[in-house]
Image (cartoon, rainbow over all chains, first blue to last red; front, top):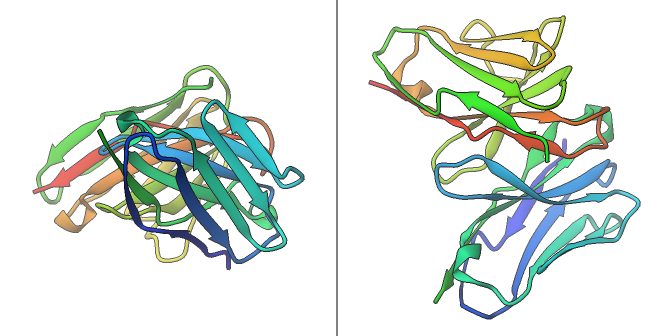
Length: 113
Length: 117
């Protein structure tokens, strides 16, 4: 059974600092890994998807790395802004489970102006 | 990007009533959709997989007679919470993947907040 863990559960930083969010998973037989953002009371917005064959993906200030062998992914957000305040979730589908996603518990981020 | 909608966004009902939540893929077809439940400040928990043209498959511990799922078309899946009780109050979110199994980005609906009085 796949287990996904995100550390820390919460993070508070001053505006301008870089954010580092960690995600670990127990079963490396994954199709891909996806990072999402969720604002309070809202649905999920996909940020980045890394295929299992890739080591990283970048979009603007966001960079996500993937190390399948060690079961880890890291989301970096450069030069954080108050608008980055949200909960960030990582999720993986097991190859045997098709698109079924197992989510981490999320990291609640607060960027203080 | 692809868009998934949910309706209603918020519903308040009395205990014992049934509530239907719709999930639509607006600009793509989805033979599979997923229904998740999220408790306050918790992560998403997969409830069931909705399959167009066949029965839904439920995760362990999810009552299929309680949470009825119908995948009526390639763009619509519905979740009906039958005889709702206060413990069913939660945030329900659906998702739909583009393309084939396991390789594609999943797009999520905006969620439905259910409150059972």
